[in-house]
Image 1: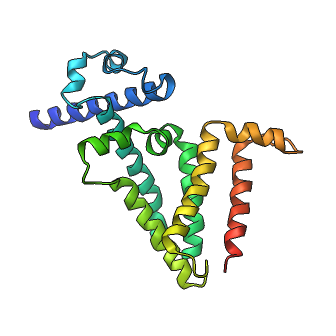
Image 2: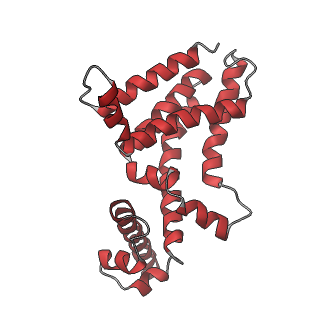
Image 3: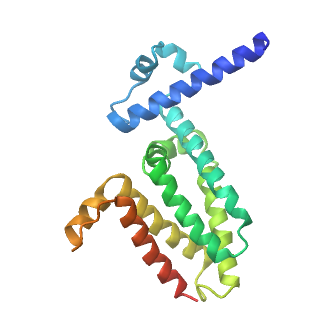
Amino acid sequence: MGIKERKGRHKEDLKARILEAAKKLFITKGYEATSIRKIAAEIEFSPTTIYLYYKDKTDIAYALHQEGFGLLRERFSTLEYVDDPFERLKAMGRGYIQFAVDHPDFYELMFIMKEPMQYLQAHHPEEEWPEGERVFDGLIQTVEGCKARGYFGDMNAEEMAMLSWSVVHGLCSLHITSHFKHIAEKCSQVAIAKQDTLLENVFQTYLQLLERMK
């Protein structure tokens, strides 16, 4: 490996360490309590080193947000080959929930924290939300395919897609903040040991409602 390649790899490795440290601190200490200095201390570098790669904390948050969407798109990419749009819609919902379960830290950065969106509005006002729009466009196309098969009646495809996303996002948000399990234990007559099982049961109920909309 040549000098140029080694320098490039060192740069990418360092950026990855910065992002991993920032993600850890954002989630455990909170965004406001995390400073560039604390991120630097976490990886034992000077704050100046971090500023070589990122303008500020919001820049770091947005970079993590982009990394998370890359992982989510990889998960969805295999679903493009599911011919039946309704089966694809169900698989997208299940994959989205599993992503939140597997990567709660990324999910919070992507869909709950406001800082990545603030960075986008401040630095790229001409772009609304490119990462989210790419995923949402796939959802709309899937809903349109369902409508072509007789699902959802005369409902607007974009509104139906937004409804579907809102329901699944609500489940994910309640799950990763532990609100879901806490309230369920208070309301349910039967104790449910695993939150994931409860999450799946509620999602299945939602799918049954969708199936009745044909």
